Length: 66
Image (cartoon, rainbow, N blue to C red; front, side):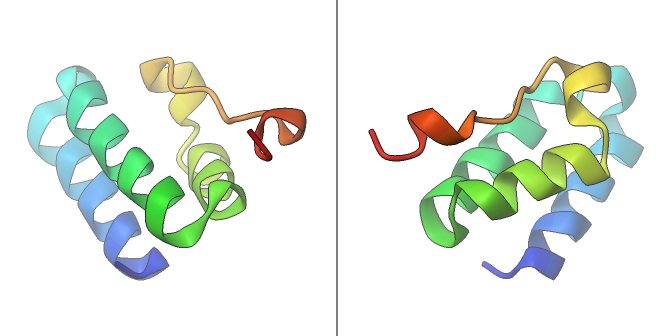
């Protein structure tokens, strides 16, 4: 997965499911964390304001090493 793929999947989920897209987006974010790292996932969360819209918080930096 690339960052652009993740962006497209997040936007597609938002367009298709609206306020109920949280579960689909969370799956994408988890995949991003696994393949591209926590920083990339946190950047996408900020970019799409996912914490506010879907209650998907970024992982704090002190948890990234665990």
